[in-house]
Image 1 (cartoon, rainbow, N blue to C red):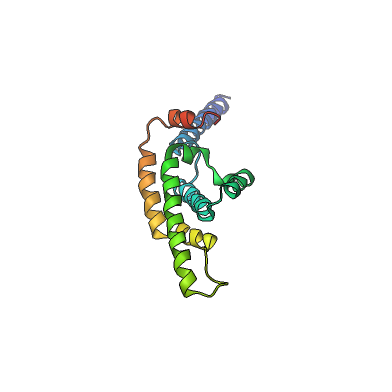
Image 2 (cartoon, rainbow, N blue to C red):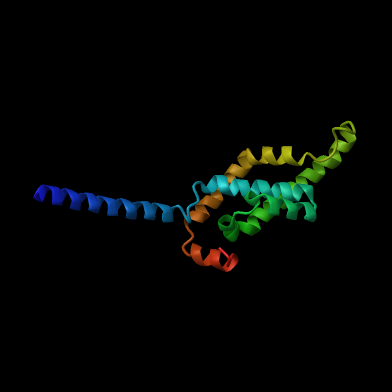
Length: 154
């Protein structure tokens, strides 16, 4: 009888230990983001698409229809950087578009927003930006207050 009780106590202890360790792993993962770099890159891609089309009505429609265009956690901390990335890529697309008018046929010239943004998403440039931002992310001490300040509904 004693061995059954001790076994149950040990089992309960292990369960509680497992529960606490999984909760701390969740917290260490900063609000449950499974992969910060992928989430950051997705937000940069979405910013690239929005800037590339340069149409506020279309941008607001995309954001309202597709929730992947806004991650409240990432954007609470890095919204300025993400917007700046989109603006920079938008400028590159405009220049490419202007240059293509003189060099390519009419059907091929102009903006290639999705193609450009997909290439940017897969680029070493965005990978290195995401790595830098991940280092910053890991060192944030007051994440809850930043999210609450920038995104009160969250």
